[in-house]
Length: 387
Image (cartoon, rainbow, N blue to C red):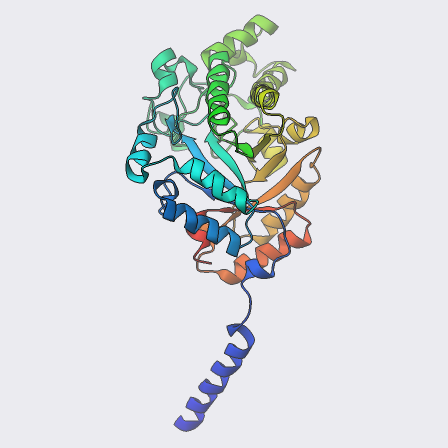
């Protein structure tokens, strides 16, 4: 009996090897041609700290047929690039280690292999850093606030509402403040001027904060958490409409005016970024990471990305649809693809969720291929090598 069991194990092992041992990886099998990867500024690979790390990235992209790199260069008010505007201490650390600007080296090497490089910038999120240049210059009046006049970080101004609603653990700038718009454009213009070989700019956190659970409109101002009550934005709305956004719950149409106002502030910021950058660099691409479900993006974070695509003020959106749920991947992607407009809709894939589930990773790729997604972008480089 023991001999029989051992023989059966050996036979099954041989069969398994013959079936799977020489099989291609899911990425090699996938027919999706446009493939990107996000590389965070805190990547364990320390991509911008040595030529060897850049070479490793290029080799990984070639092996996995990745043709777009989204490289984080601005986060939490820190510049990971050669800046004269923002805090460049992180960049100085990189230069001290690498001995040269690795962004320039990456752009040179990626061009040899026709790999596009996008400079990824966190636009309205300051993470947890209030000690940023824009806050130092203008004070906390540039931060967005909820209807209780609290900033978005969950560790400050805690009250009874925090028992029922979860704030993002980040500070957000107010997109309806012209000082925020001007500062943002200056940062992005500096990046594109300093690195003219960039293929594009990738906008992240170009939205209002996302509380959980969320309220679908300011009609329900007495419930949940609603953002956009930054000082300058509120005053501008009052001047334009004669209405007080803090007192619209009982009105028939006033809350819709306020919701549309906030949505317009985000769209106007994207429009201003796009027009300024493309005026100086006509071939530059503008991409944005977005809340994946169109209705939620529109009504909660006031991120009307279908309109951005329709108007052509962005060239691509990347859906942050990070999930193990194939049903969610299917339903949200199908809905999102109907809003292509003048640009592309790419699917963000949360590789970090599937490091120990390669079969699920393969299923997601197959599903996105069957839906004719315009492309896929992996989050993130650190996790991709483990698939």
